[in-house]
Image: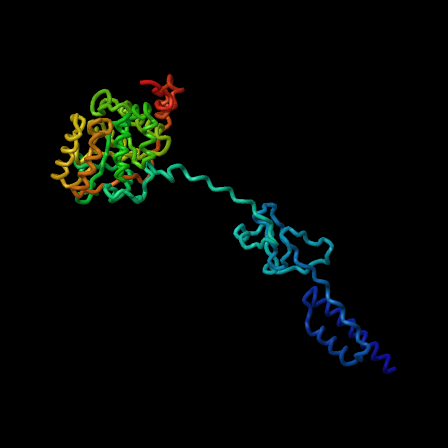
Length: 413
């Protein structure tokens, strides 16, 4: 009888315990009922007859987030080391709801993480596009490839003492004859500049004299002359000289019709820039010199807008009035002796100047003068409408693309 009572009590207690567990799980029932059931079970039921504890529910792996089709953001799962894009097991046991910290939010991972994915676990990223090739100006920033003083193997040459880079932003102006603000030359420093080329015979002779002396100059070329002799313009550039422009046809822009029509004046300037640029077939400097050193204010403002520097002069040789090289040499040396330094204006168009150059350079060295070479910070940009205008001027010569010395040969004399 005692055994029967114990069994009945045990069954009642177990029933109450089960009821309490259900309440505790589903309705947050009193904890005391569950505790009481456990206490009676432990007291009246022998251990051998205790029911086996139920096996814990199977825990499924967290559901993996959706993986983007973009190869850049398809990443390896950092916790399982499984390849990105592995599908979750649809047949696994129901998963216990995870906390936000346990499962990443659905959606593609940040792009920046692609840099941390290993080659074994992450798909190969799409190759980056090849960088664009540098513009031609990277090697030649404006008609002069010289950015550092090259060695000179000629002991008697005057050489170069310094290279100065000109930032033409806003159109600065140089040359004390008209502009007093910028005085970048030291005592006994000279800048050699040449106008009105390129011209057969004369310009190559000037280039040879400069090259033989390991030195450089700045050439302000007339656009028409450049279209007639592009091979010479290319020779000037190849020798490392700086090339600027000097209008299309050497018109005085302070006189009519240019003084009264700014569009005509702009065309004269811009066609010159375009023509020299085409002749060189590469970058030229945003350096400009007005014919006859006449500087109309409205055109100075226009050049400033175009970020083109204007050059007057410190010393005008007036070599265009001279017929003998000795006169050119005396003019330059006498004026330098008085002033001590300066930007010198000469003309490679003039035969006397071409003849004077070797001796002039020798005397400059003997007098203790030093040559400074100007280069631009950036090349000039031509304007398409004026490029087209230059092309229109030479419609009948479209086949004349070879230099004269490759077309005409003396075979008897």
